Image (cartoon, rainbow, N blue to C red; front, side, top):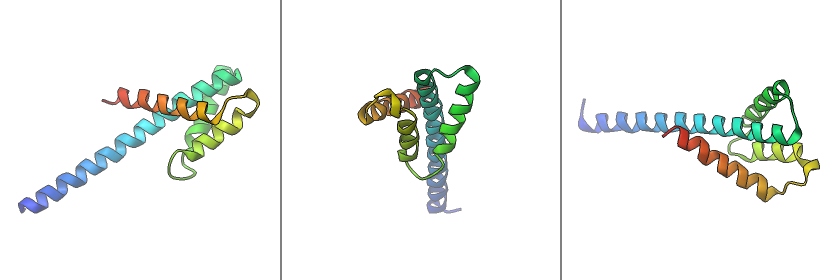
Length: 102
């Protein structure tokens, strides 16, 4: 195997690892968002568990975070929480999730 082939394989492995890590971080962030919203909505533990799953599933609707944002924003519409506050919390929880995988 040539040096070029080895280097290419190395880049492919790094890309796959980075993608897997990003998926895990996003899933963990979505779990935390689900917990946060569940507390605001006053859900019991069973409802919280179901809601967390709904948030995680919402993330598969499209690429990026907008699908999760729209779900959370719609669910919090009666609680006077601004778009900025939701996005800020999403960023905060994303950083928390990232730190757990370092």
